[in-house]
Image 1 (cartoon, rainbow, N blue to C red):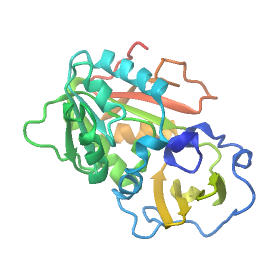
Image 2 (image 1 turned 135 degrees about the vertical axis):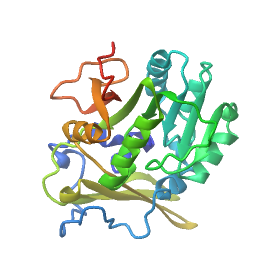
Image 3 (image 1 turned 90 degrees about the vertical axis):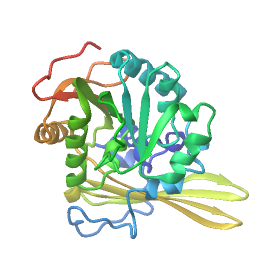
Length: 297
């Protein structure tokens, strides 16, 4: 899922905030702390797998403008697909899936949020993407679904499953859905600096008739980020919650190995930028364990 205007406090843009120096972007005001969160639980009451999508669907495309990022990801995915079907996990409003389908590929997209899928279908050429309402942890597809050359989750979407069990089940399901030489592609930020439970509140938008705040907290023992965008207008208050479970590339590789996938390649961006110790994000490519071999950037 993507983030409004590059703003911190939403899952998508955590990749662009220094994890080793959170105070560089998060003000002291509103800082909080508390007891460790038990693994697998959520401090945001009534949060479910569809909460994020349901809460952001109405403003998703208005808040996100990532044309350069989208173009680079579409170019890479379409080249590696080489004519094979593609599956996007957490397809949302189709930011990547719709232009991918425009290249002539067979594109499927799953999402747990019906409002997100409705937005996709309403778009010009939205019907070019075969959409399925299902969880990322189960990926329940109809019988006519093909084996996929690529299954991918863009821009931190994989982290939006909030338990290790869900993430592992997702990777296992992906492995079962790929062609023999198919690949799983995950686009994720690198969570550096998760040292102590803390958080903050910050103004992201201020106008005469509208105020938007973002509030978040981190639970290092559970690798969990949780937060809200709070939109205040004359009409009232609108809460847009999010939650995510993060991991390092090394932890992700171990989870993938447990699911029967192995790392084939890793870059720092969709244009094949080299991955280094200083990289803030990674595009990681996994193949079925018996197949794993490097891909060219």
